[in-house]
Image (cartoon, rainbow, N blue to C red):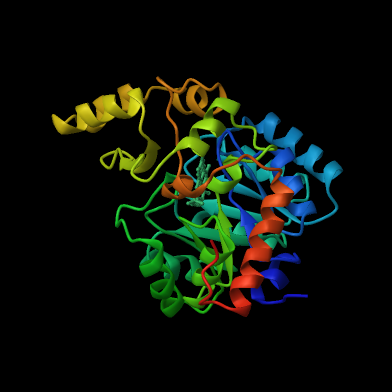
Amino acid sequence: MFSNRITQLFNIDFPIIQAGMIWASGWKLASAVSNAGGLGIIGAGSMYPDTLREHLQKCKAATDRPFAVNVPLLYPDLDKHIQIIIEEGVKIVFTSAGNPKTWTGHLKQRGITVVHVVSSSKFALKAQDAGCDAVVAEGFEAGGHNGREETATFVLIPAVRKAVTIPVIAAGGIATGQQMLASMVLGAEGVQIGTRFVASEEASSHLSFKQAVVHAAEGDTQLMMKKLTPVRLLKNKFFQQVQEAEARGADEMELKRLLGRARAKAGMYEGNLEEGELEIGQVSALVNDILPAGQIVQDIWEEFLTALKNPLLHQG
Ligand SMILES: Cc1cc2nc3c(=O)[nH]c(=O)nc-3n(C[C@H](O)[C@H](O)[C@H](O)COP(=O)(O)O)c2cc1C
């Protein structure tokens, strides 16, 4: 049995956390990962309050193991989400994209473990001061929304490790056991993995999007929309429109208009690979198959153990 501060904090077997992801991580994915001994996270960011409640109830029915909910703190229905999370007895919340001071105390008073996602050691310290139990240090390589500082995971982990005493979970560019071991050598005590789990059978993302992830090569993603909220996108027609607009100096308003309301849903959930917004990480270049989520957890853990035994033996 492996044990460290992260497995103890969440009461899980392996310090492998499946990231909360809009349009990808519903109850099916979260419960599959939790049943495999990792920590599954339901991504509330794309859910109406009633949808979130339904996912929480289905997840509780599908697993006895701990699972968490990711709540982006800029979400319009935030108050309702928090209320539902408390009512449904969720034990672990991962917050992101906002000030950790706003909700951490409220959640902690109700016995909920709180983890905040950060992109710099300055924000990690803020999260620790707000009372968070751990931080996710998410580097520039990551899929989804990203820090303005553009600090890459290999630099971010040791920097955050130095800045805080609470456990650090590494995220951004991790899809294999070797990458997991490297992150933990640098000071992380667990990993949060997004892109790899988009290409899983249980992810709610559209099959066409999963296939696009499997076919992505190095250089096929880029961080865009820095004037608005930086987001790493898979290159497609919509990406080209953003690139064009940014090249001629489009302002925030124009970018907002271009993004519109339902781009992310159209791309990732409905499979419109041309017009939709496709959020994915650099590590998609290393993802070559769509597998059951439980097998992904097992494979990563076995690779991690093999690499730990002989870290300099490079596996093919
Ligand atoms: C499709 C997709 C959607 C995401 N949605 C969210 C989200 O709703 N909230 C959040 O905090 N992070 C979100 N992220 C970021 C992930 O939680 C995670 O930190 C990131 O994917 C890790 O990097 P990786 O993709 O290289 O594994 C998303 C990532 C992806 C790929």
